[in-house]
Length: 266
Image (cartoon, rainbow, N blue to C red):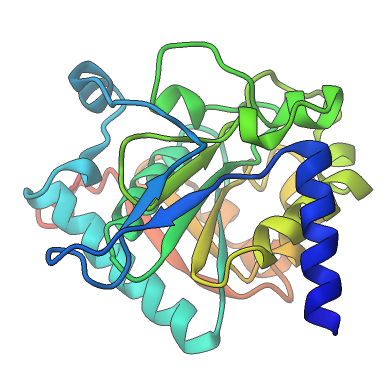
C-alpha cells in the first residue's frame, strides 16, 4: 500500500512539474546489463572543441588520462558499493584546484559502467560551471528551477554519453547557503536520491574555505571526495580537514597537477 501511495504522489508531482526524465531500457549484446535511451531529455552532442577545451579526458576510450579516471572510478565505486552509498560530493579547499574537472570526468567515467546510471548535479551555486563543461550555449539550470519554477524536464540534458544526465546550475546565486538548505532544495534532493535505485549522484560542490555551503549540505550526501592541487593547496589548509569534515565520510583525496610524471594525469 505504501508503494502505491508513493507511486501516486510521484505521478502527481510529474504532472505538476514535468517528469525529471524518461528513459527506455534497450538490450544490446555490447551492453547487456543496462543501456539507456533518454526519450524526453534534451540530448547534446559533444563538439570536439568542447572535449579538448574542457579536458573531458574520461570521454576518450583509451589513453593514460582516461585510465586515471577509470582507476578513480573503480576505487570510488568500491567504497560506495561496499557501504551502500548512492551519492558523493566533490569539493576542494580553495578555488581552482580542479574539483569541477574531477566531478565531470568522474561522472563520465562512472556512466561508462553498464549496470547503473549517473546524475551529475551542479551545486556550486555561486560559481556554476558544470553546464559550460559540455556546451558553449546558454541554457536554463538549477537556479531557474529554484527561483522561477522551471520544470527539471526542461533543464536536464544528456551530453550524448550513455547513462549520464546533467543538472546544470546556470546563473550564480548570492544567497547560495540559504538556497542549499531551503525546503525546496531538500525536497528536490530527496526526490533525486530516491527516484531511481540504479543511479549514482555526483554533486559538484563549492570549496570548503570560501563559504559554509558545503558544510550546510554535506548531511545530504553519503560521502565526500576532496580534490587537492600540488603546489597550491597549503598544508595548513589540509590540517583543517578533520575539523571541517567532522562527522562526514571522506571517501578519499585526488591529487591534481602532480609534479611526479607517474601520477601527472592532467
